[in-house]
Image (tube, rainbow, N blue to C red; front, side, top):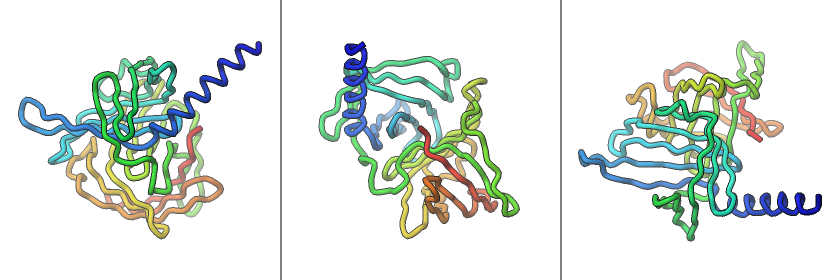
Length: 234
């Protein structure tokens, strides 16, 4: 029994160590056979990650996938919750060799350069939409259900993803950079899966943390008023 607890403690300590090193946003760029630069952003927060590909020049969305992660024996192991191009992968696990050297992250043979280490934005983490305010009343949402809307934020980048782990359906995503200054949360959209005309838009919202929940209000990219409540994912 003591050996089991020791192994679990070592696994936990190893994961915490890698969390401190890996958390934040990373990027790499490659030029395809048409000369178009493809940007890949991978964002890690405690326990969850998202990786997304889009064109650098016009923000045309290509693919996204992600889920939960741990590190064991220098292997990054992920349980996939959503995959735009290959939905059949949802529910499967995937492993990659991982090394970190200062500001360079290497997954298998692909190198990523650090964008941020989880700062300076104040909303770092994985958040699940847990409610909306309509007609002055809060309407709660069960975050344990398969249909999820999740936002993953590093210190400078954000991405929302809507998906269903049971049906493996992918509903949409968008993301880019963000800032939190004087109670204002600003999103600068770099890609948007459903409508690339939203790329380049900047949206400013009011935000506050109430009992650990993120209250988010303003107007959507369509101009409709919104009041959303997000809860940190555990």
